[in-house]
Image 1 (tube, protein in one colour):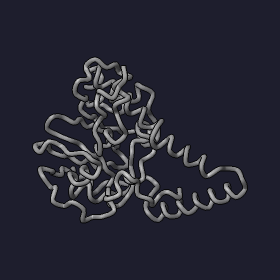
Image 2 (image 1 turned 30 degrees about the vertical axis):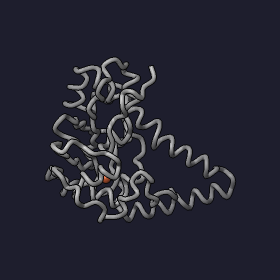
Image 3 (image 1 turned 180 degrees about the vertical axis):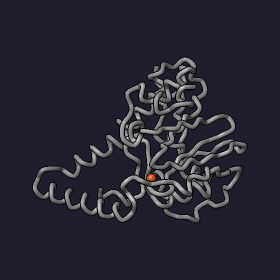
Image 4 (image 1 turned 45 degrees about the horizontal axis):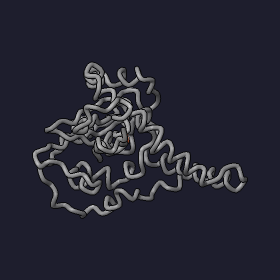
Length: 243
Ligand code: FE
């Protein structure tokens, strides 16, 4: 789509690789070895991507000129899948894990099956792995080579997820990337970065917000943001749920 190269406003500094390099802190990277050999057998290497983008743009222009589509309506559609429908699925998974410990255990041991049990399955979600944030560890997800992303639970990836600055910088200095998203962790927390591949798509299970014991599963789901499940954000404060 035409928005492909526009950085999202919530991560504009990602375009500047020299921003805030001082915040290295306790961040560490634990990229499993297979990341560097990761098999991208899916059909979006860069030459194809450029070709596809061109074709999509031509089609969009043609359809607009013929009056078949409204560019505005298209943007609303994309926004719906990027920000609304998709991540709400993931939020239900997270809220269930927060309220049902057996489900949480299942999710951590076999995420694909546990997620499919809620009817969220399909392309780009065949092999899911859920990584749990704890008092000691904060997890972040990236695809360093392209844009692998768990569609069934998160919808379409946001523009910044596909951007070269995010993909490279989150590996080198995750704490400064987090800071640009407005997240500051306790200094003792270790950051683990997971590199998605064609085979494995990661989803972050954030820590349950404090003072949320009285909330229902549905109310808890409302606190789970898309970014919290990528690891570039945290769940919303429990006081934001109106009772
Ligand atoms: Fe990828």
